Amino acid sequence: MIYDDDGSWDGTAALFYLLSQPEISILAVNISYGEAHPQVYIQNIGRALDSFGIQDIPLGAGQDAPLANGAPFPDWLRQRSDNFWNVPLPNAGKTYPVQYAPELMVSTINQASEPVTIFLSGTFTNLAQALRIDPGIRDNIAAVYIMGGGVYVPGNITNLIPDSSNKVAEWNIYADPQAAKEVFEAGLELYLVPLDATNKVIFHKADILPWHTGDEKANLAANIFDKLFTEYGLKQVEIFDLGAAVIMVKPETCAFQPLHLDVITEDGITSGQTVVVPNSDPNVQVCLNPNAVLITQALNDSFSGSSEPLDIPSIAPLIGTWTGSISNNGFEMQISVTIEETCQLGQMCGRFDISTVSCSGTLTWVGMDGELYQFQAGEKTAACGEGIDYLLPQADGTIMYISRGDYGETTGVLQRAP
Image (cartoon, rainbow, N blue to C red; front, side, top):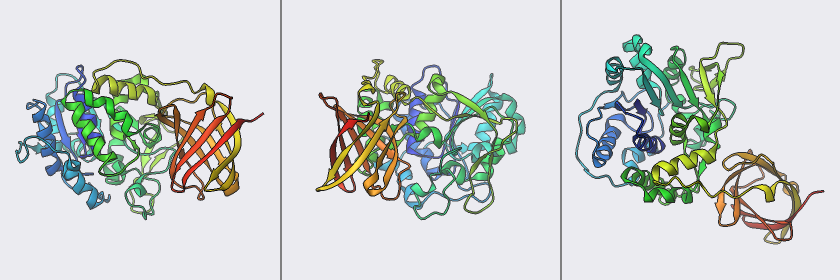
Protein backbone atom coordinates (compact mmCIF):
# COMPACT_ATOMS: atom_id res chain seq x y z
CA MET A 1 0.00 0.00 0.00
CA ILE A 2 1.02 3.60 -0.66
CA TYR A 3 -0.16 6.21 1.84
CA ASP A 4 -0.73 9.73 0.50
CA ASP A 5 -2.01 12.49 2.79
CA ASP A 6 -1.72 16.28 2.97
CA GLY A 7 -0.46 16.57 6.54
CA SER A 8 -3.77 16.51 8.40
CA TRP A 9 -4.39 15.41 11.97
CA ASP A 10 -6.98 12.84 10.90
CA GLY A 11 -4.81 11.60 8.04
CA THR A 12 -1.89 11.17 10.41
CA ALA A 13 -4.06 9.15 12.79
CA ALA A 14 -5.11 7.10 9.75
CA LEU A 15 -1.44 6.33 9.05
CA PHE A 16 -0.94 5.14 12.61
CA TYR A 17 -4.03 2.95 12.29
CA LEU A 18 -2.80 1.44 9.02
CA LEU A 19 0.61 0.78 10.54
CA SER A 20 -1.19 -1.19 13.26
CA GLN A 21 -2.73 -3.62 10.75
CA PRO A 22 -0.51 -6.72 10.43
CA GLU A 23 -1.95 -7.58 7.01
CA ILE A 24 -0.94 -4.22 5.50
CA SER A 25 2.54 -3.43 4.20
CA ILE A 26 3.09 0.28 3.59
CA LEU A 27 5.55 0.71 0.73
CA ALA A 28 5.80 4.51 0.75
CA VAL A 29 4.51 7.50 2.73
CA ASN A 30 3.80 10.68 0.78
CA ILE A 31 2.66 14.16 1.77
CA SER A 32 0.85 16.26 -0.82
CA TYR A 33 0.03 19.93 -1.13
CA GLY A 34 -2.83 20.76 1.21
CA GLU A 35 -3.28 21.18 4.92
CA ALA A 36 0.45 21.38 5.65
CA HIS A 37 3.57 22.30 3.67
CA PRO A 38 4.77 18.95 2.25
CA GLN A 39 8.52 19.43 2.80
CA VAL A 40 7.89 20.46 6.41
CA TYR A 41 5.30 17.90 7.38
CA ILE A 42 7.07 14.89 5.93
CA GLN A 43 9.80 15.47 8.50
CA ASN A 44 7.18 15.24 11.24
CA ILE A 45 6.13 11.91 9.78
CA GLY A 46 9.76 10.78 9.67
CA ARG A 47 10.17 11.61 13.35
CA ALA A 48 6.97 9.79 14.27
CA LEU A 49 7.95 6.68 12.31
CA ASP A 50 11.45 6.77 13.82
CA SER A 51 9.93 6.87 17.30
CA PHE A 52 7.98 3.71 16.40
CA GLY A 53 11.21 2.02 15.31
CA ILE A 54 10.20 2.24 11.64
CA GLN A 55 13.05 3.48 9.47
CA ASP A 56 12.67 1.54 6.23
CA ILE A 57 9.62 3.18 4.61
CA PRO A 58 10.58 5.69 1.87
CA LEU A 59 9.27 9.21 2.39
CA GLY A 60 7.99 11.52 -0.33
CA ALA A 61 6.91 15.16 -0.51
CA GLY A 62 5.01 16.71 -3.40
CA GLN A 63 4.97 20.21 -4.80
CA ASP A 64 3.43 22.89 -2.59
CA ALA A 65 0.89 24.05 -5.17
CA PRO A 66 -2.12 22.72 -7.10
CA LEU A 67 -1.96 21.58 -10.71
CA ALA A 68 -4.26 24.45 -11.68
CA ASN A 69 -6.66 26.83 -9.98
CA GLY A 70 -7.31 25.50 -6.51
CA ALA A 71 -7.22 27.39 -3.24
CA PRO A 72 -4.80 26.92 -0.35
CA PHE A 73 -5.85 26.01 3.15
CA PRO A 74 -5.78 28.99 5.57
CA ASP A 75 -2.30 29.98 6.74
CA TRP A 76 -3.24 29.57 10.40
CA LEU A 77 -4.19 25.94 9.81
CA ARG A 78 -1.09 25.17 7.76
CA GLN A 79 1.08 26.61 10.52
CA ARG A 80 -0.73 24.50 13.10
CA SER A 81 -0.22 21.37 10.99
CA ASP A 82 3.44 22.17 10.31
CA ASN A 83 3.88 22.39 14.09
CA PHE A 84 2.20 18.99 14.55
CA TRP A 85 -0.56 20.69 16.59
CA ASN A 86 1.93 21.38 19.40
CA VAL A 87 2.15 17.66 20.13
CA PRO A 88 5.76 16.88 21.14
CA LEU A 89 7.63 14.51 18.85
CA PRO A 90 10.81 12.59 19.69
CA ASN A 91 13.88 13.25 17.56
CA ALA A 92 13.08 16.96 17.34
CA GLY A 93 15.35 18.61 14.80
CA LYS A 94 16.35 15.33 13.17
CA THR A 95 15.81 15.23 9.39
CA TYR A 96 15.16 12.34 7.05
CA PRO A 97 15.81 11.78 3.34
CA VAL A 98 12.83 12.70 1.17
CA GLN A 99 12.05 11.94 -2.47
CA TYR A 100 9.76 13.76 -4.88
CA ALA A 101 6.40 12.16 -4.11
CA PRO A 102 5.01 11.60 -7.65
CA GLU A 103 8.27 9.96 -8.75
CA LEU A 104 8.36 7.84 -5.59
CA MET A 105 4.81 6.75 -6.32
CA VAL A 106 5.71 5.79 -9.91
CA SER A 107 8.81 3.81 -8.96
CA THR A 108 7.08 2.06 -6.07
CA ILE A 109 4.16 0.96 -8.23
CA ASN A 110 6.35 -0.16 -11.12
CA GLN A 111 8.63 -2.17 -8.85
CA ALA A 112 5.83 -3.83 -6.88
CA SER A 113 5.43 -7.56 -7.45
CA GLU A 114 1.64 -7.29 -7.21
CA PRO A 115 -0.91 -4.52 -7.75
CA VAL A 116 -0.68 -1.73 -5.19
CA THR A 117 -3.53 -0.14 -3.23
CA ILE A 118 -3.32 3.61 -2.64
CA PHE A 119 -4.85 5.32 0.38
CA LEU A 120 -5.41 8.96 -0.58
CA SER A 121 -6.60 11.29 2.16
CA GLY A 122 -5.43 14.71 0.98
CA THR A 123 -5.41 16.48 -2.33
CA PHE A 124 -5.15 14.32 -5.43
CA THR A 125 -2.06 16.23 -6.63
CA ASN A 126 0.61 13.56 -6.16
CA LEU A 127 -1.41 10.79 -7.81
CA ALA A 128 -2.46 12.99 -10.73
CA GLN A 129 1.16 13.96 -11.34
CA ALA A 130 2.29 10.33 -11.08
CA LEU A 131 -0.26 9.41 -13.77
CA ARG A 132 1.06 12.24 -15.94
CA ILE A 133 4.64 10.98 -15.52
CA ASP A 134 3.74 7.37 -16.32
CA PRO A 135 0.13 6.59 -17.31
CA GLY A 136 1.07 2.91 -17.38
CA ILE A 137 1.14 2.68 -13.60
CA ARG A 138 -2.63 2.32 -13.66
CA ASP A 139 -2.09 -1.29 -14.74
CA ASN A 140 -0.42 -2.08 -11.41
CA ILE A 141 -2.82 -0.15 -9.16
CA ALA A 142 -5.34 -2.45 -7.50
CA ALA A 143 -7.55 0.28 -6.04
CA VAL A 144 -7.52 3.80 -4.69
CA TYR A 145 -9.38 4.55 -1.46
CA ILE A 146 -10.16 8.24 -1.09
CA MET A 147 -11.51 10.56 1.56
CA GLY A 148 -12.91 13.53 -0.31
CA GLY A 149 -15.84 15.30 -1.88
CA GLY A 150 -19.47 15.56 -0.96
CA VAL A 151 -22.16 13.88 -3.05
CA TYR A 152 -25.55 14.84 -1.63
CA VAL A 153 -24.51 17.08 1.28
CA PRO A 154 -23.10 20.63 1.53
CA GLY A 155 -19.36 21.21 1.41
CA ASN A 156 -17.07 22.11 4.30
CA ILE A 157 -15.13 25.14 3.03
CA THR A 158 -16.97 27.45 5.43
CA ASN A 159 -15.79 25.33 8.36
CA LEU A 160 -12.39 27.02 7.93
CA ILE A 161 -13.37 30.15 5.99
CA PRO A 162 -16.78 31.20 7.38
CA ASP A 163 -17.34 33.98 4.85
CA SER A 164 -16.55 31.83 1.80
CA SER A 165 -19.19 31.89 -0.93
CA ASN A 166 -18.39 28.27 -1.81
CA LYS A 167 -20.95 26.10 -0.01
CA VAL A 168 -20.60 22.93 -2.09
CA ALA A 169 -16.96 21.78 -2.21
CA GLU A 170 -14.94 19.63 0.17
CA TRP A 171 -11.40 20.74 1.01
CA ASN A 172 -9.38 17.83 -0.43
CA ILE A 173 -10.90 18.48 -3.85
CA TYR A 174 -11.36 22.25 -3.54
CA ALA A 175 -7.62 22.72 -2.97
CA ASP A 176 -6.80 21.09 -6.34
CA PRO A 177 -9.92 20.31 -8.39
CA GLN A 178 -7.97 19.66 -11.59
CA ALA A 179 -6.02 16.86 -9.94
CA ALA A 180 -9.22 15.28 -8.65
CA LYS A 181 -10.83 15.46 -12.07
CA GLU A 182 -7.85 13.73 -13.69
CA VAL A 183 -7.92 10.92 -11.14
CA PHE A 184 -11.68 10.42 -11.53
CA GLU A 185 -11.17 10.15 -15.29
CA ALA A 186 -8.14 7.82 -15.13
CA GLY A 187 -10.04 4.54 -15.30
CA LEU A 188 -8.88 3.38 -11.87
CA GLU A 189 -10.81 1.31 -9.33
CA LEU A 190 -11.87 4.13 -7.00
CA TYR A 191 -13.57 3.89 -3.61
CA LEU A 192 -14.74 7.22 -2.19
CA VAL A 193 -15.63 8.09 1.39
CA PRO A 194 -17.19 11.58 1.08
CA LEU A 195 -18.61 14.03 3.60
CA ASP A 196 -21.94 12.18 3.30
CA ALA A 197 -20.25 9.37 5.25
CA THR A 198 -17.78 11.22 7.47
CA ASN A 199 -20.49 13.55 8.80
CA LYS A 200 -22.05 10.47 10.39
CA VAL A 201 -18.98 9.31 12.33
CA ILE A 202 -18.51 11.76 15.18
CA PHE A 203 -16.07 11.39 18.06
CA HIS A 204 -15.94 13.04 21.48
CA LYS A 205 -13.16 13.14 24.02
CA ALA A 206 -14.50 10.07 25.80
CA ASP A 207 -14.17 8.03 22.60
CA ILE A 208 -10.40 8.57 22.61
CA LEU A 209 -9.75 7.48 26.19
CA PRO A 210 -9.27 3.75 25.38
CA TRP A 211 -6.47 4.60 22.95
CA HIS A 212 -4.22 5.70 25.80
CA THR A 213 -4.00 2.05 26.87
CA GLY A 214 -2.51 1.06 23.51
CA ASP A 215 0.98 1.15 22.01
CA GLU A 216 3.04 4.17 20.97
CA LYS A 217 1.10 4.61 17.71
CA ALA A 218 -2.22 4.62 19.56
CA ASN A 219 -0.93 7.03 22.18
CA LEU A 220 0.40 9.49 19.62
CA ALA A 221 -2.95 9.41 17.80
CA ALA A 222 -4.71 9.97 21.14
CA ASN A 223 -2.40 12.88 21.97
CA ILE A 224 -3.29 14.58 18.68
CA PHE A 225 -7.02 14.21 19.34
CA ASP A 226 -6.55 15.40 22.92
CA LYS A 227 -5.06 18.65 21.60
CA LEU A 228 -8.16 19.20 19.48
CA PHE A 229 -10.43 18.78 22.49
CA THR A 230 -8.34 20.69 25.03
CA GLU A 231 -6.03 23.30 23.51
CA TYR A 232 -8.25 24.02 20.50
CA GLY A 233 -11.54 23.73 22.37
CA LEU A 234 -13.43 21.38 20.05
CA LYS A 235 -16.37 19.53 21.61
CA GLN A 236 -16.63 16.89 18.88
CA VAL A 237 -14.90 16.01 15.62
CA GLU A 238 -15.66 14.15 12.44
CA ILE A 239 -12.77 11.71 12.00
CA PHE A 240 -12.67 12.09 8.19
CA ASP A 241 -9.51 10.29 6.94
CA LEU A 242 -9.31 7.98 9.94
CA GLY A 243 -12.82 6.75 9.27
CA ALA A 244 -11.96 6.22 5.60
CA ALA A 245 -8.97 4.10 6.60
CA VAL A 246 -11.15 1.89 8.78
CA ILE A 247 -13.71 1.52 6.00
CA MET A 248 -10.94 0.42 3.63
CA VAL A 249 -9.60 -2.18 6.07
CA LYS A 250 -13.03 -3.30 7.32
CA PRO A 251 -15.37 -3.39 4.30
CA GLU A 252 -18.25 -4.53 6.50
CA THR A 253 -18.38 -1.00 7.96
CA CYS A 254 -19.90 0.49 4.80
CA ALA A 255 -21.61 -0.72 1.64
CA PHE A 256 -20.38 1.07 -1.49
CA GLN A 257 -22.64 2.04 -4.35
CA PRO A 258 -21.59 2.84 -7.93
CA LEU A 259 -21.88 6.41 -9.22
CA HIS A 260 -20.41 8.56 -11.94
CA LEU A 261 -18.87 11.68 -10.42
CA ASP A 262 -17.37 14.70 -12.12
CA VAL A 263 -15.49 17.65 -10.62
CA ILE A 264 -16.09 21.31 -11.40
CA THR A 265 -12.67 22.82 -12.10
CA GLU A 266 -13.59 26.36 -13.14
CA ASP A 267 -13.03 29.18 -10.65
CA GLY A 268 -16.18 30.36 -8.92
CA ILE A 269 -18.55 29.54 -6.12
CA THR A 270 -18.85 25.89 -7.21
CA SER A 271 -15.15 25.21 -7.82
CA GLY A 272 -14.22 21.77 -6.51
CA GLN A 273 -17.79 20.49 -6.28
CA THR A 274 -18.31 16.80 -6.97
CA VAL A 275 -21.33 16.33 -9.22
CA VAL A 276 -23.30 13.16 -9.92
CA VAL A 277 -23.61 12.53 -13.66
CA PRO A 278 -26.80 10.51 -14.26
CA ASN A 279 -27.16 7.87 -16.95
CA SER A 280 -23.39 7.38 -17.20
CA ASP A 281 -21.19 4.38 -16.51
CA PRO A 282 -19.94 4.47 -12.90
CA ASN A 283 -16.38 5.68 -12.35
CA VAL A 284 -16.32 5.39 -8.54
CA GLN A 285 -17.78 3.32 -5.71
CA VAL A 286 -19.15 5.56 -2.96
CA CYS A 287 -19.77 4.98 0.76
CA LEU A 288 -22.76 7.02 1.94
CA ASN A 289 -23.98 5.33 5.15
CA PRO A 290 -21.19 3.93 7.32
CA ASN A 291 -21.75 1.97 10.50
CA ALA A 292 -20.31 4.26 13.17
CA VAL A 293 -20.48 1.60 15.88
CA LEU A 294 -18.36 -0.86 13.88
CA ILE A 295 -15.87 1.87 12.99
CA THR A 296 -15.49 2.86 16.64
CA GLN A 297 -15.10 -0.79 17.61
CA ALA A 298 -12.42 -1.34 14.94
CA LEU A 299 -10.44 1.63 16.22
CA ASN A 300 -10.68 0.39 19.79
CA ASP A 301 -9.58 -3.07 18.68
CA SER A 302 -6.45 -1.62 17.07
CA PHE A 303 -5.61 1.28 19.34
CA SER A 304 -6.55 -0.05 22.78
CA GLY A 305 -5.44 -3.62 22.25
CA SER A 306 -8.87 -4.74 23.40
CA SER A 307 -11.41 -6.66 21.38
CA GLU A 308 -14.16 -6.27 23.97
CA PRO A 309 -17.38 -5.16 22.25
CA LEU A 310 -18.57 -1.64 22.99
CA ASP A 311 -21.22 -1.43 25.69
CA ILE A 312 -23.88 0.35 23.64
CA PRO A 313 -27.27 0.57 25.35
CA SER A 314 -30.48 -0.06 23.47
CA ILE A 315 -32.22 2.92 21.92
CA ALA A 316 -35.57 1.22 22.56
CA PRO A 317 -36.63 3.44 25.52
CA LEU A 318 -36.47 6.51 23.28
CA ILE A 319 -38.17 5.20 20.14
CA GLY A 320 -41.26 7.13 19.14
CA THR A 321 -42.51 10.71 19.25
CA TRP A 322 -42.37 12.73 22.46
CA THR A 323 -43.98 16.08 23.23
CA GLY A 324 -43.97 18.50 26.10
CA SER A 325 -42.90 21.81 27.54
CA ILE A 326 -39.28 22.83 28.08
CA SER A 327 -37.92 25.84 29.93
CA ASN A 328 -34.91 28.12 29.57
CA ASN A 329 -34.51 30.78 32.29
CA GLY A 330 -38.26 30.74 32.87
CA PHE A 331 -39.18 30.95 29.19
CA GLU A 332 -41.53 28.10 28.30
CA MET A 333 -41.44 26.44 24.86
CA GLN A 334 -43.27 23.55 23.23
CA ILE A 335 -41.17 20.77 21.71
CA SER A 336 -41.66 17.50 19.88
CA VAL A 337 -38.89 14.91 19.48
CA THR A 338 -39.02 11.82 17.27
CA ILE A 339 -36.50 8.97 17.44
CA GLU A 340 -36.68 6.33 14.70
CA GLU A 341 -36.85 2.63 15.44
CA THR A 342 -33.78 1.97 13.25
CA CYS A 343 -31.61 4.45 15.20
CA GLN A 344 -27.95 3.45 15.59
CA LEU A 345 -25.05 5.18 17.29
CA GLY A 346 -23.38 7.62 14.93
CA GLN A 347 -26.33 7.92 12.56
CA MET A 348 -28.91 10.64 11.99
CA CYS A 349 -32.10 9.04 13.22
CA GLY A 350 -34.36 11.65 14.72
CA ARG A 351 -35.92 15.08 14.47
CA PHE A 352 -36.92 17.86 16.84
CA ASP A 353 -39.24 20.84 16.52
CA ILE A 354 -39.41 23.66 19.06
CA SER A 355 -42.46 25.30 17.53
CA THR A 356 -42.55 28.25 19.94
CA VAL A 357 -39.34 29.72 18.49
CA SER A 358 -39.39 28.08 15.01
CA CYS A 359 -36.31 26.00 15.79
CA SER A 360 -36.17 22.54 14.21
CA GLY A 361 -33.69 20.07 12.76
CA THR A 362 -32.34 16.55 12.73
CA LEU A 363 -30.81 14.54 15.57
CA THR A 364 -27.74 12.28 15.33
CA TRP A 365 -27.03 9.88 18.20
CA VAL A 366 -23.38 10.62 18.99
CA GLY A 367 -22.72 8.87 22.28
CA MET A 368 -23.50 8.39 25.95
CA ASP A 369 -22.71 10.63 28.90
CA GLY A 370 -23.34 8.29 31.78
CA GLU A 371 -27.01 7.34 31.42
CA LEU A 372 -27.74 10.30 29.15
CA TYR A 373 -28.25 9.60 25.46
CA GLN A 374 -26.30 12.31 23.63
CA PHE A 375 -27.52 13.81 20.33
CA GLN A 376 -26.09 16.38 17.93
CA ALA A 377 -28.55 18.62 16.10
CA GLY A 378 -28.14 19.18 12.36
CA GLU A 379 -29.90 20.86 9.43
CA LYS A 380 -31.13 23.45 11.92
CA THR A 381 -33.28 26.47 11.19
CA ALA A 382 -31.81 29.93 11.76
CA ALA A 383 -33.46 30.34 15.17
CA CYS A 384 -31.51 27.44 16.69
CA GLY A 385 -28.26 27.93 18.58
CA GLU A 386 -25.32 25.56 18.96
CA GLY A 387 -25.31 22.88 21.61
CA ILE A 388 -25.73 19.24 22.56
CA ASP A 389 -29.08 17.61 23.34
CA TYR A 390 -29.55 14.85 25.89
CA LEU A 391 -32.43 12.45 26.49
CA LEU A 392 -32.81 10.45 29.70
CA PRO A 393 -35.51 7.77 30.10
CA GLN A 394 -37.44 8.03 33.38
CA ALA A 395 -38.90 5.22 35.47
CA ASP A 396 -42.44 6.53 34.93
CA GLY A 397 -42.21 6.16 31.12
CA THR A 398 -41.42 9.80 30.38
CA ILE A 399 -38.09 11.17 29.17
CA MET A 400 -36.08 14.10 30.45
CA TYR A 401 -34.91 16.53 27.75
CA ILE A 402 -31.74 18.54 28.42
CA SER A 403 -30.04 20.92 26.00
CA ARG A 404 -26.76 22.68 26.83
CA GLY A 405 -25.45 25.31 24.47
CA ASP A 406 -25.44 28.93 23.38
CA TYR A 407 -28.55 29.77 25.40
CA GLY A 408 -27.53 27.99 28.58
CA GLU A 409 -29.43 24.94 29.80
CA THR A 410 -32.92 24.08 28.64
CA THR A 411 -34.82 21.26 30.36
CA GLY A 412 -38.21 19.63 30.45
CA VAL A 413 -40.10 16.35 30.80
CA LEU A 414 -41.62 14.88 27.64
CA GLN A 415 -44.55 12.49 27.32
CA ARG A 416 -44.95 9.84 24.66
CA ALA A 417 -47.34 11.11 21.98
CA PRO A 418 -50.54 9.07 21.47
